[in-house]
Length: 167
Ligand code: CA2
Image 1 (tube, rainbow, N blue to C red):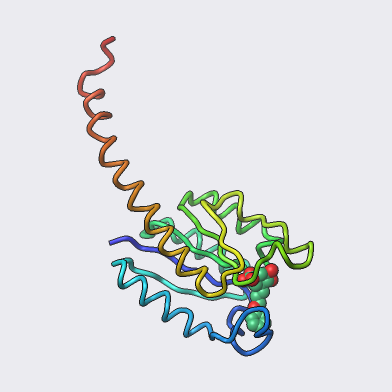
Image 2 (image 1 turned 90 degrees about the horizontal axis):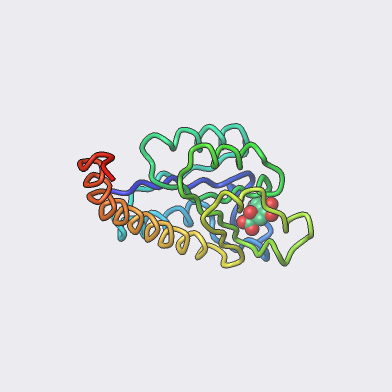
């Protein structure tokens, strides 16, 4: 069974309570339930966490190396500031999808830059909660495809190995 860690960054615990015109009316609990429901349909095990602390997010990314196949992260404001989160994602090497509820490219200039996108397989921005569901489907497809690729390329590799280095 594929395992995906879903991380929500700072202030996302406030979802649904304020700034509804930007971030919508859904609470984080309801969003997490929708992600869990889709994960069940896809037979994916999800682990959902939110933190207001950069260090805690870094630790959770590092820990994901053991036992997880991929990461979905909305780093929230850390998107635009955190080299530490970028480095952690690069270090673990797990396929990662960056999600934003709002369209960061249509907002203030300081939100246009993401330190994360360069180490992610993709970024979804501006589609609201649906963005997380699309990220889950996209990451699931990506992981299945790379598993298949590994399986089909393994025999050829071991055949070459069995033949040794004869030219
Ligand atoms: O659009 C997104 O998902 C963001 O990652 C949200 C961050 C923001 O700093 C990014 O530029 C874009 C802010 C999350 C704050 O969430 C709140 C939710 C409800 C009420 C207040 C804040």
